[in-house]
Image (cartoon, rainbow, N blue to C red):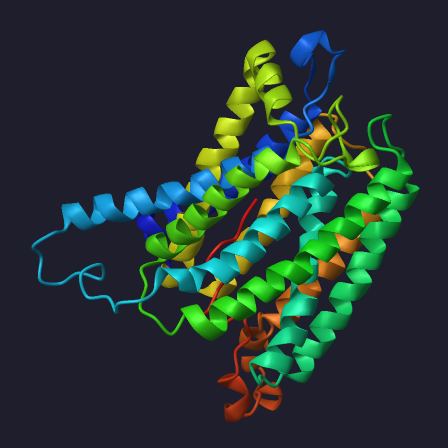
Length: 371
């Protein structure tokens, strides 16, 4: 079936804004400028402040929801008007997971390349599959277990590519390895978020924009308040600011004043995450979760191509192999192979197997799919 113009618009919006989200964050990280008090020029390494900006972008979805509600107010047929009442605090646990996972990933993005950052996020399949079996009582198909194994192999290959690649001075081998491990660690937290959303949130008829905006509100408020104690907590080697603390928001604002292009990068990150979440949810609704997965994989290719073209990283053949294996693992886990097998009479799966859907491949997609 051919896509409509609206579906093509949604697919393009998801691909473009998703790519901008990661690339703009990495662009901000690459700037070097002076901070407060005449300090020497240093990189803009403020991952927690960037995470606050990301949640601000998600929070803006709540404003979009209420604008939509005002626009269609009085209509009899509306998905906004006929909604089940719910307790907004249901979104607090997933928001805390989202806040923690996002902050860790922004720390890791300072240490590794944008393409590896995007590829290694595929590890979420492993932990989501295992947690869905343990806590949601799901039974994974053999193809999904093969997909998980392929994902593990792909992660190892991407890690080897990072280990053997030539890195510039700001990305030492030890930093790259640490960054890669932090990304994988963050996927454990993201998978917990997805299981919590599956178990407690999806049973309520909550509009997607309202869901994204509510989690963004909690993440923005809590993390913004945490910037105060972070200003005094020493972080040692993990700190990228002259004071050596966990996050120096004042230093960040001084750097913003001295280099306005950082503001452009942050605004790109904030605005893109709002449109990306909206487009991702709309693609799942208007087309399918499989289409969303394919577009997300294409996003990795776009980020990789731009990173190479801009000279942010060097080409390594192992990355191609690793990305291909990760793509195969994701496709198997999400059942992308089933339409192909369905064309073969002797390879059609049993009817009871077709109705089993995974957390990532079914209708229950993650509410927040950040950066």
